[in-house]
Amino acid sequence: MSDVESHGIRRCVSRKSVALAQELRHARSLIVVTLSAASIVVACRPAVRVTTAPDVATAVVRSSTGLQLGTLTFDEGGTGVRISGTLKGLPPGVHGIHIHQVGRCDAPDFATAGAHHNPAGRKHGLENPQGPHAGDLPNIVADANGEAVVDLALVRPSSETSAVAGLLNANGAAAVIHAAPDDQRTDPSGNSGARIGCGVMARE
Figure 1 (cartoon, rainbow, N blue to C red):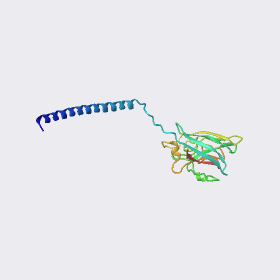
Figure 2 (figure 1 turned 180 degrees about the vertical axis):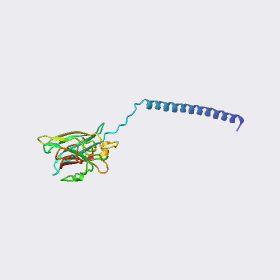
Figure 3 (figure 1 turned 120 degrees about the vertical axis):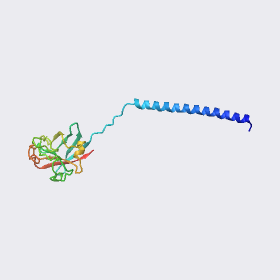
Figure 4 (figure 1 turned 90 degrees about the vertical axis):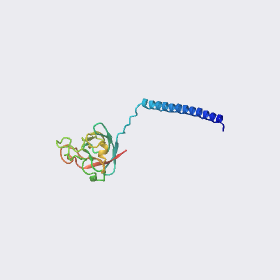
């Protein structure tokens, strides 16, 4: 190869290298601009707020003979759990209602529901200075037709972050209706008499 040919090749390679370097710089600029634009778009998007759905449970309440009395719903609120629903087929009058510490309702006496939900070991009764149990509730009233509209608040069911989750521990929980009024003072169940209705709590 002559000196002229060699010189021409070196000049061509040099020009190609310069052109390639310019293309690479241009490509890097495009990548930087693209990434910057993407960052701006992401930064300008409104923040997505992640919310957790409230814990909800229900309990189908049945009588000692298996008659369905109604369904109670347990919704988490700002200060605890709201219990709502309508029960039918009850004896007219005032009845005690409590949350018990075992999720079983074996008829006819519902003894398998255990004692009241009471993780703090307090005495029974909303009016008891040493109470109440975490599962204590105000009485409900059945009208002349045996219908009771339930709208109650369980204000301190547990120390758990989720109140419903605190009720539904390894043993579960049950809502129990009693034959007589709860006097809200007498241990262990306010002289509220026999258990005439029971429903096992379960998440929806």
